[in-house]
Image 1 (tube, rainbow, N blue to C red):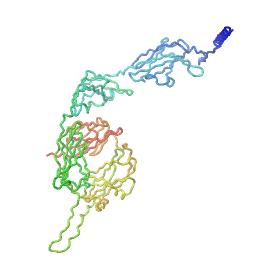
Image 2 (tube, rainbow, N blue to C red; image 1 turned 90 degrees about the horizontal axis):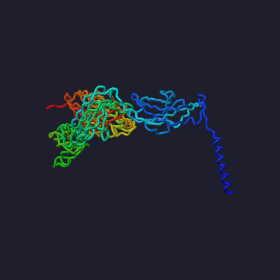
Image 3 (cartoon, rainbow, N blue to C red; image 1 turned 180 degrees about the vertical axis):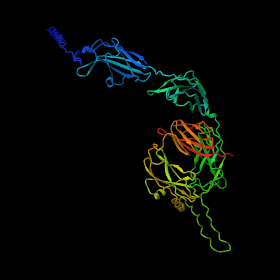
Length: 595
């Protein structure tokens, strides 16, 4: 009985399978041409695609199916697809595209990066009556390498030379014609050590637009190998369009072996009398080559002891070749000296001492009664206040990092000792501005850069000349009110330079300039023109004309001196940099006095 039931069940399963097979319905599709297709018509055997290169492009050829197709959908992706192919846009080709029997070919335009890999998928398709396209599966798939860029014109071979330069190396060569047309940059490649060839591995490089390269901050007394080749920028990539130059090996300078010159003090002049109050002494000296820092030693004659002169000197350090001291004590005699040091700790000798004295308090004359006339001595009177002779015109000349630089016309008041700049937060009247603590500026200066203000905040500023009294004295306040400037209201920015600074050619006298790569600054007092060859956040390189030097490199925050052919001494300071407005360079000058 059990055996009979098993036989019946097995027979039933076989019958169901037969019925399912006999009555299975295959999907059918109606083409736009009116033909009817079955699922089986959309399957075919995979055939490989053969990549080819034609005239620097990338092309493919494949074998078409024998029937049932109307065109091809071609997907081409640089690299491997990172998403479904349906999210890419295919190129639809007619079935007769580049027909050569059953072989079909297609050449892509120059849309891919040179020397890259491209994945290609080809699907024959049938256009259905519904408007959709039915792809034949599984399609053709392959990848190919895009040819490397082949320049239309080969440039001349460069001949480069190299020499030690300051604390690094300078590479030089004769400029090639065709910069900006046949090629865009020079690619300078270097690697530490002596090498027969240079490759990308462990090598450094820089793309530059001029015919020399200064590389600073190298290891002391080390050999470096350099090579240069012209390149052209295509689709965001640089391609070599000339033969590589010769290899040159240069030994870098040893900064530790550099002798540091002794600084020469220029301000104050020896035995000069200063009258500015508060007593912030402005000290200055000639900048020294290779100097990274300066140390200042300042002492007062009797401030610490009336028995021992120059006791307990104070030291200051700065990276600039100038320094403004804190307020000094009393109308006394002071002396200071300076020494320079480099990054390696090598130091110069101390400079000679420079002496100066302060005289800020007025001399009050008290008449003494004649001995033969027994009359009381008259009450002492203060000196007659200085008489103002004209107003001061105040303006904002430029902006740096959202903060203004104010300048004013020089006072014509006789005997004045300097200027007081009053700045007050908010838009306020002059009485409230004057109640603020003033900024004291030496009478030789008519420009001041305001800093440490709150961003996006309203401020009020005015300036005036002050006489020989202390600023708290009522006579000085009266005199200041009589010679005050117009009042200016302004709003600070948020550390972005304003549109008043810009790239382009500039000309003028002493002051702050901004310049981008290739721009020139003409200093009209000295006849020196400075062209910005390159700059970054650390340094700027200037090409000079009208000066005794041809080119110099300034480090950010440091100053260097140059001498013009007319005998002017210019102090150049690289103050800051901006992606929008270039390099900011401060220029000050004085006439060189020959003994």
